[in-house]
Image (cartoon, rainbow, N blue to C red; front, side):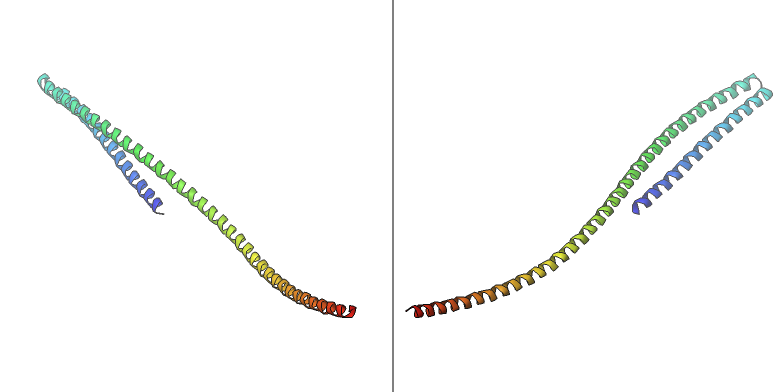
Length: 176
């Protein structure tokens, strides 16, 4: 969420910056138009009211205003270039942040997918473990039963061996 807030804040700054730039351009063009109109008005007044001497003075003023206007136009072009450069940089930065955000979203999605898979695997292993525990308990019971049978059979064998020994002794006695 913090990344989205930063992106939104950057977008707002970018929009405000663009608005200011556009307003500055409009103001400078409006000023330029007003100056041209004033020059045209002054030319008209000069032609109608003053003689040639006054016209020469007015022409000098006109030329100085043209030079001033030219300097201002150059300055406007310079600022427009700076603004265009800044806008390009901000767009590149936004694109970079957008790509980073997409990568983070992809990583989050992959993490969630992996987490789900691991949880499913854990469940399977838990079920298998429970089954193995039950089987182990059953095997232990079977082994204990087997051990009891073996002990019983060992007792039976021992008893039978004792009986065989007794019978052998009886047979030896009988044969004598």
